Image 1 (cartoon, rainbow, N blue to C red):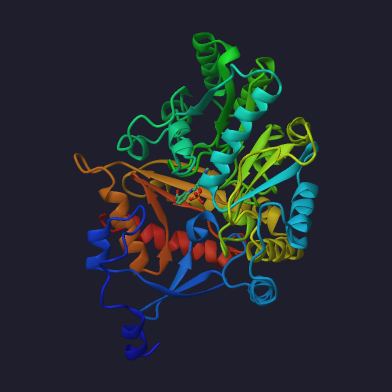
Image 2: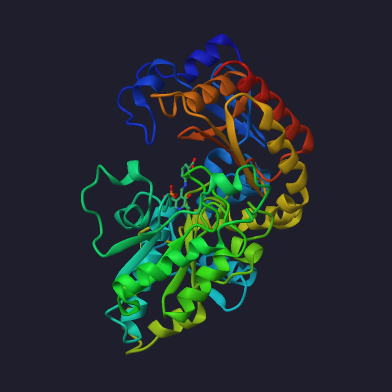
Length: 444
Ligand code: PXG
C-alpha cells in the first residue's frame, strides 16, 4: 500500500469511538488498524501482513474473506435484506436450523437464534428457568456458574460468570446465583498436554452447593467445557462426566457454553462430541458464521422444546426473541460457512493438527518467565510469571511486540492465548511459534 493510501486508511479523530475491552488511551496514542483480511492474514493500515493466531476473537474458524461466504452474503443482502423475526419466517432460517440439528448428537435437535454469545447465554438461562416452571418445578430459580467462567457481558452472563473484573463494577447483578470452584491446579497439572490427569473431583464442589441450597432451588448449571477467556483451562479427565451425573441425579439442567469450543475448535464439531458428555442446552456464536456476520444460537433437546408446545395453538409459547433472531444475511453467512467447513473438512481438522500444534505450543517451555502451558485441539495457552506489582504488563508487552513482528496473539492477565483459524498450515504454525519464541526471549 502506498503511504498516501495508508494515511487515508487511518482516520484523524479516534476520540468518539469508546472501544470495547480496550485500553482506549494507550490504543489511541499508537493505533493498530486492520484494513483488510484474507485467509490466514490481516493487512494493517501501514500495509504489513499479520498472521492471525487468534481467528479474530476466536471466531473466524474458516479463515478470512472466504469466497463462498462472501458471495452468499452479497447475494442474500440484495435478495432479502430483512424479514420480521416474530410471527413471520424465511426459508434459510429453517434450512439452517435443520442443518445444525443434523450436526448435533440426538436428542439435541432444536435451535433458537440470537446475535451473539452474550445473548445465547441469556437465552439459555431464561429457557432453563421457564422450563423448570413449565414442568412444575417453579422453585428451581437458582443458576450456578463457575469461578473464572466467561459467559459474555449481559447481566445474566456476568452473574453466572466468574471473572472478577467483569463483575465487580456492576452492582448486585442477578440474585440467586452461586458458583462452583474453577479447575485450575498448577501444582498438580502444570504443563499438561491435553486434558489434565488430576481434578475430576473438583466437580464434587457442586455437591456442596446442592447441599447448601437444596436441589429443589437449582434450575441449571452453566460451564464452558473448555474455559477460554479466563486464559484457557482444560477440564481434568472425567470432570465433565461427573458434573453431568450430579446434574442428572438432582434434576438440574446442564448448559455447555460452546461459544468458543463450537464449530471445530477442538477437533470435533462441538465439545459435547469430544468429551462424550451430553448437556441439556448448548450456547454458541462466533464460528457459526465464521465471525462474518453477528449470530448466535442456543441448541436444546427435543424434550425441552416439546415441554413448551402446549396450550392453545395461537398463543406464543416462549416470550423471548430478538429483532435480528435468524437474520436472513446471518443465515446465509452461516449456511455458506457450514458448506465451507464441510467441503474442507474443517470441523475435524483441528484433530489432525492437534499433535503438531501441541508439540509447537509446548516447545516454548524453556522460554523466560513461562510458568505453564496448556493445549487442546487448536487452542494453546502460555502462562507467564507476572512482573511483581504490575500484573498483565508482561503479556501485554508480548502482544505489542508480536504485532510488530507480524503475528496476532491474545492476552488475558499474563496468559497468552492462541486459537488460529482452522485452515492454518504446519508452516504457519512454525512461523507463529518461531516468532513468539523470539518475542518471549527478548526481555518482555
Ligand atoms: N460465552 C463464551 C464462552 C465466550 O467465550 C461469550 C459467551 C460472549 O460472546 P459475545 O458474542 O457476546 O462476545 C464468549 C465470548 C477472548 C475473548 O479473547 C473471548 C470472547 C469474546 C472476546 C474475546 O478471550 N468470548
